[in-house]
Image (cartoon, rainbow, N blue to C red; front, side, top):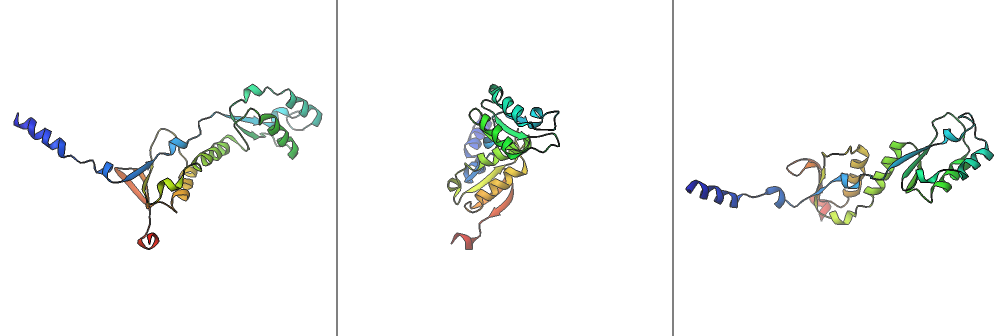
Length: 182
């Protein structure tokens, strides 16, 4: 019974140093793009996969099945080595805009990075003013360098310090000097 009392007394005096450290963890997975991405390949609308015929192209845009793109993020690209006039990309965009979330010119990866950066830009840097911030390192989703660079750019002017990793094991990235805080 004395041993049980000793264990209970020890549990009461255990201190969670991580919780008391004042560290704020920022998990970039929160800003990971969640909406579906669809690639609109211009090649599919070219004569023989190489030539844009205006009349046929315009007709195909009028008959485009928009439900395939509803609520999605669209990357417009062309997998063929074809010369496509600028107005064609504009025409595609004008048809997709009423149903799509976001439309960019580029591939799937470029769209994903663009969306991720757009989401990171919604972070209110003032919330991290003079705070000790840990940018979470490990997770379930593949967070790329683009996101880590963007969040560092965003927080460095305001944060007291920036670290990478987990609150119990961090890598120091930036610490505001005493001269900067005065």
